[in-house]
Image (cartoon, rainbow, N blue to C red; front, side):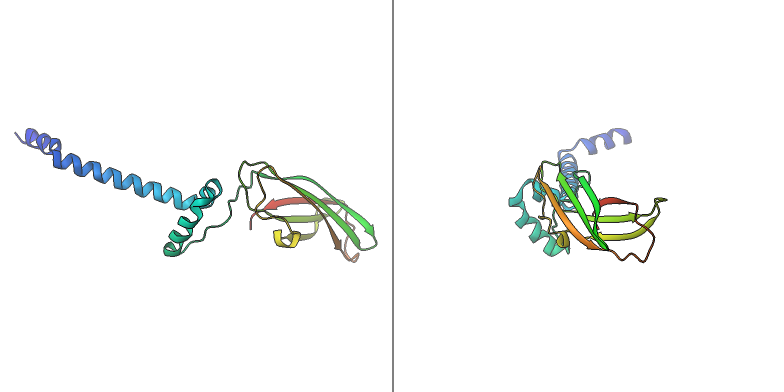
Length: 166
């Protein structure tokens, strides 16, 4: 008898409607949470949604930034050469391999000695490099950056370049 009553309770139209509404609300909450987490990517895919996310972030105390995808931005080429005395030139080429515009990364230039030990490390921000921000899909950007490095330390024998988002 109890088993039949339980079965009848869960089979009722009101209970089933309530369960359906609960599942629907939970799915909408999950979709909103995923959308909030992926808001930069969504605004890159659909630029017209930026106004909605800016409005939503006004209440949720977040920001809508430019889409970041470090796997999409590659250092396509670089060189570090002495020009004269303490003057050097650092040449760099970045490429966006994504189908979406992505935020320009910062560049870490590490100068090394003959034993590949770091001698000097310098962080170059996108604004300092004058990289177009965001990088268009498939875009390539190149620059030659003059640098002055005092000769007071160990001899520079090599360098490493790393693109990253701070």
